[in-house]
Length: 306
Image 1 (cartoon, rainbow, N blue to C red):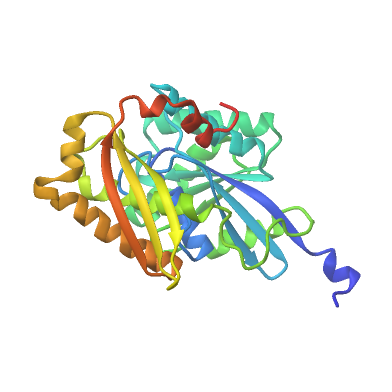
Image 2: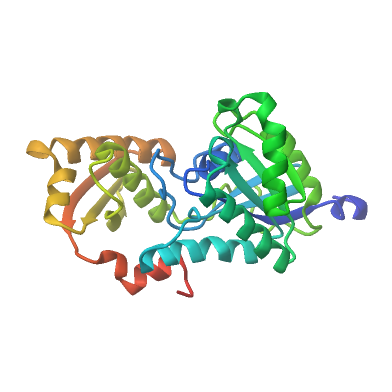
C-alpha cells in the first residue's frame, strides 16, 4: 500500500499540441506514446479531430491532446478543425507549440506563433516551444532561430527535437513530468488512447486513401464505418464507405479496374490487424456524397460545440 508521501507525488495533466499542418505533431505523439495513436501522412491537414495519447511513466500520467493543424480556414469544415485545435489549448494544463524548424521563417508560421502565444497568455496556460525536424537544420542556425520564435510566441521554454528519430524527446518528457499538476490519473495506467476502436479503424482506412491517391485526390474524402461485427472465430468484419464529393474523384479512388481501391483495402486491412491483433475482413465501397463536409453531425464530430 502506498504511503501518503508517495501518493502526493502522483501527477497527471493535459498537454495540448499546437502547430501548423505537417509540423510533426502526430509523429511526435506516436513517438512519445510508443504506439500509433494518430495517423500520419505527408499531406497537410491529415489530422481532423482531436486525439488523445496517454503516457504513463512511474507516478505520472501525461495526456497529450493532438489536434488539427492551425491554418487559415476557407470553409466551415476548416473552421471546425481550427476551432478544435484552439479548444484544446483552453482545456490544457500546458501547451506545446510544435514548429517545423525548416519552415519557421515563413510568415504563416510566424503568425501562428504570435497567436498561440497570445491565446496561451490570455488563458494562463504555460506554453513551451518545440522546434521539430532539427535533423534537417544546420546546428549553428538553431539557437538564433529558437530565440526568434520564442520572442514571437512568448514561450516559457524551448526544446529541440526530431520526432522522426526521437532525438530530444526523452528530455522533453522528463521536464513535462515534473511540470504537471499533482493529482490522480484520469485514465487506467494501461490505456494508450481514449479513441473508440471504430473511429480508429476509420482513421486507418482514411490514412491509406490519402497515401494511395497521392496528390490526385484533394481533401474531399472521408470514411464512415457502416458495420463492425466480431465473429465467433474472433475475427472482425468491417464494412466501410469512402465518400468523395464528385464522380471524377470516385474514379480516382477506385482506380483502373478497381486496382487502387483493392490496394487501399489490402493496406488498411493489414494496418487494422496489426493495431487490433485480430484477423480483419474489410469491405470497402466508394460513394459520391456532395457537400459531406457540411453535414452538421460531421462538424460536431470534429468540434462538439460547433
